Length: 337
Ligand SMILES: NC(=O)c1ccc[n+]([C@@H]2O[C@H](COP(=O)([O-])OP(=O)(O)OC[C@H]3O[C@@H](n4cnc5c(N)ncnc54)[C@H](O)[C@@H]3O)[C@@H](O)[C@H]2O)c1
View 1 (tube, rainbow, N blue to C red):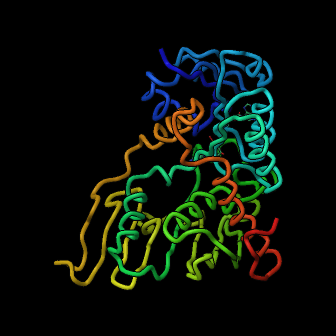
View 2 (cartoon, protein in one colour):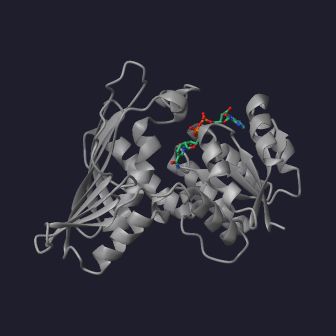
View 3 (cartoon, protein in one colour):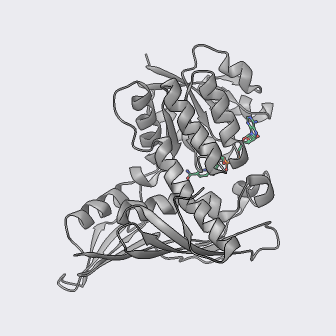
């Protein structure tokens, strides 16, 4: 018998990943017992595949005492209100990234979870991803020498199912554009490699006629360590080879880290070809199982969570400082709200 019953809210694109790559692989530990979507067709379709109970009303699902955890896979502007509602009902919460669309909302979520003794986690996968974790270990082991700088990179073209419902490409509705959507992920990567960020200078731009708000952004980061780095975001280019998601440069060499193959390459002049492929495979799709397992075990009191709300809040602080900088034209401190 599974130890933990979850109700998943928002049966759209990413919900299928949580279900098929997550709950389906963790059936001894956790049961997808209920699903909820304001669109009954989507709730019923997902419920049917998992023998879960479909709901269209969150309050009704939250009133079900068998549900211990709520997994939120809804649009960004709904994260905070639905998470606060679930926490107030005494449920543990896993919320998709970004934790919220304002720092105040994210702080409220973290505070309520702490006050109620509930586990709030954020579904950001890079802290669970093998190549990224291994890269951090190699940096700490001195394999590239003293750390010099870091660059993250999220470039491509968004379309298809990700734009199906219209909210994501409308920053006015979603509470932010591409930078809000992807910024938490790539901030978490930068922080894994180089530590917390102290201040940010940023520009945002709109390059697509079918997009309202930022679809492109560039950030210069100053880390608390004194190091500097950069992040480039763009959803406006149809190209087949976009480059790796992260480059970490040290005095002796550098690491190229990606979720596609090869996912971890060490470049150093003393190596036979000047480089060594350390992981010659794409990151397996089971990273969502690791996220859900971590949240479940934390909620059951069996481990400290890897990606608690406080970490999601720290990533959001960098994104919000970048938006402030893009508006003000100044370097903005991360700590300020
Ligand atoms: N971690 C990742 O790699 C990753 C990847 C994709 C999406 N996401 C995140 O997942 C979340 C959802 O994105 P998506 O692409 O699946 O969106 P989507 O538009 O495909 O799905 C959202 C679903 O929520 C439903 N919904 C809207 N309001 C609701 C409400 N009040 N109650 C219940 N259901 C409601 C919609 O009907 C829709 O089915 C976002 O936060 C997004 O950033 C994360």
